[in-house]
Image 1 (tube, rainbow, N blue to C red):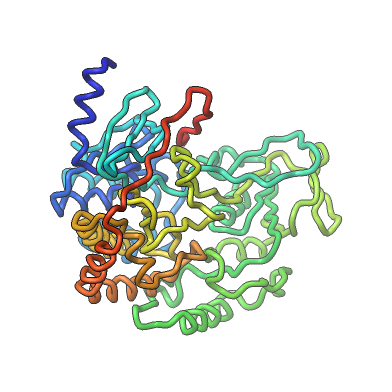
Image 2 (image 1 turned 90 degrees about the vertical axis):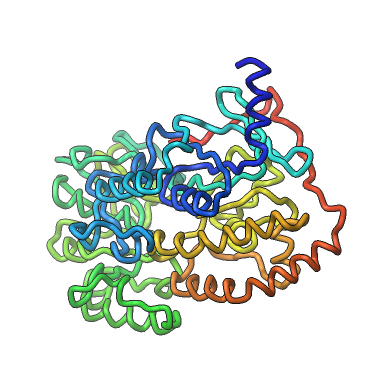
Length: 454
């Protein structure tokens, strides 16, 4: 690419925002920016839109929250979709969403970003893997949290195959095999149930028991039974009651009682694992102690032979294209205010990093308009919106898990108080007349680059 072309790109994009990612959250934010007439570009590292529903899930996957709360509020799913749409349903839905709101013209596919840094005049330089550079007014990061695979550390060696749950795509990978699934989340339970159907053996290894929450109760999706007025203690009581009436107790399945309260960890909505345990098709085991050839030893001293180990052990939240100074991730928590904003830099926005118990579409629909209001307010002041939130007393998050009903209440309150926030923002802005983003140096030629890999 010639220098003249690069300069043209710099000029053309300085009044735009860049959205990174064209999955569920990225598309939702793109539609919000477009509706507000905020100019933007959108890029994705994959060769198609849809995010995890395109490149990350197995063919037999279904959502765990219901259609009703997962859909965008302003774009309902088709009436013929089931209560728990499939992976293909979800991908078709996101494609329909992009077409309905005419989002495709702004989307560039197969565009991997290698570096994002603040430069002079509060602008942001974006470097692509092919060497192209552009300057943007702001960067909205919606690159998801289901792509950087987290593997456990094993002692010993295993003669069979070890994969991550993200590498699992089709039941044929399990067919006729002795399968060990490690983990207690939704993917782990789905894969253990699949192995129970098509495999020679299915063992589910959990370091500690989880709460198996039924996907429906009295024919209604569990997620649809909660309302905005329900405090979390009441939701917990409902869940405990429905679990007891549906499954009984953990001891009925040879499992220990979970050490955490319901909703203190991401919930596991699954009816099949308890069913297959009762039928002898899934054997629950504690954590893995060591690997030994074809066998796996567990912490209780028992040993089992396996052909395949599937690590459904989750993902790390990461922004590998950011300089170390801007990597604000602590565990699974991004240390930002208002869900998205830094207090020391403006123009960089973390969106979609948290994990609500369900309802991503309805949450993005509600948050999108609030985010746009904050973005428009950011244009009126010189200091970062994150500093405004900090100065009015907001605290940094300490947990990546959240109650969707609580989020809805917080968004309603934030919209109600927005005029007050505008007044405070201008007062705080007047106290910092010389604020400017601190530019950071460019990527060095010998500095390792970790592009976002699907």
